[in-house]
Length: 88
Image 1 (cartoon, helix red, strand yellow):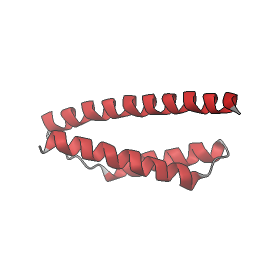
Image 2 (cartoon, helix red, strand yellow):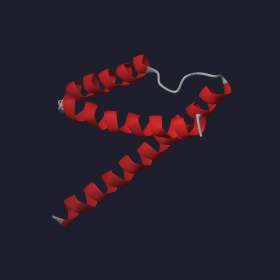
Image 3 (tube, one colour):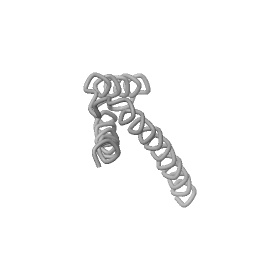
């Protein structure tokens, strides 16, 4: 059982590291949007990202609604970060 838990711990570390990388890119995007007077919210992009994630999940035989829910939270956090940058 410890081996499995160690594997899960390592995967959790990787997941958090990837989310951190994604948020760093989102921060850069926030600065770009501010510099170029681009609105923070880009609904078409949000929808595209969620749909793409759902398709990837389905292809990997994961529950698409589950993955879409995760992306909803990730995008929500990214939007909050960008809002703080664009409109402090």
